Length: 384
Image 1: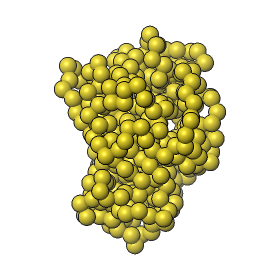
Image 2: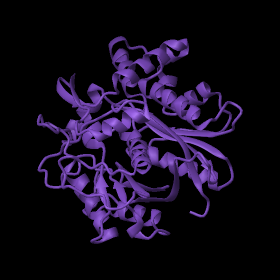
Image 3: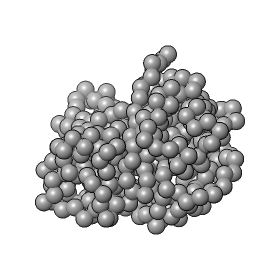
Image 4: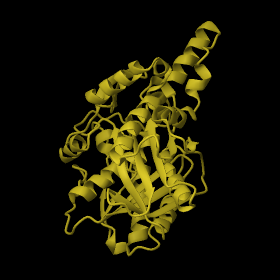
């Protein structure tokens, strides 16, 4: 990339919390954030946002009568966006674009409206506008009083990193100087869990670590769902207040055998990583934050793709899904936050039950991967 893109702020709320110091502290311990809740007619492990973030959302919902009808996914995006804008020092006089996506959008609200319709034969007045995917960025724009372009999209689990791609494209094209990008997800509902169980990928483990993301020898799928939102502020040029720089971006889609398949060596990941790293000495990549959702094939095929690209000299490998679960459309931006924290603290955070890896040099470059149903992969290279 010939034009420098600065990340001047990142903010989130998730099972890890909503403050950088708190989130980093959670990453340093070896405990997961899962708890059992009765979903899909049985006790189920999920990763809910923490108590403090829950209170933030409760107060936000009560702060404006119009917000009482919004889905949690929209409220999560508004809360994270407010904080990111404040952290970046942006104000209502700044013109910036917004691209915040979600894999499933207003899941909980849609299910409730549909259930009510089945019972009564009538739909509520606000059923359509509050469940439309585009209402995420629209409500964020309303809340922030922004005047730039608004984009919402769903590209399954790579949604947030596709938002990053869009932001970079707008900035490099000279069509904007600032862009707010990210993803949000509130998928902890009966029907969503049931869908994951129907795919036979949801964890049934009750051991110390219910999700075995990056355990390449596991014999069963162990994906667990989490919720949350994350956004980052992108600005054109090298800014003094930059947390990190986007040094490379890559994307690819592969031909599928069926709707959720991925090839044995994740061809899409190989292509996206090579594209993101085309101007980078591979030996300079210090860490890869893998997508690694905790499924047998998903984790292993991504690992094989990394082997194909990097050969014997693999960077340090990690993921956060063993701790916070898979947050679908928000997962890529939460992985970016994880990467930025490791860059800032110059400390590698591995997976406690995976093969130990030793950090032998400063962390200067981190690659983040995400892939979604449909075989669409995105890779983003960050540097300091």
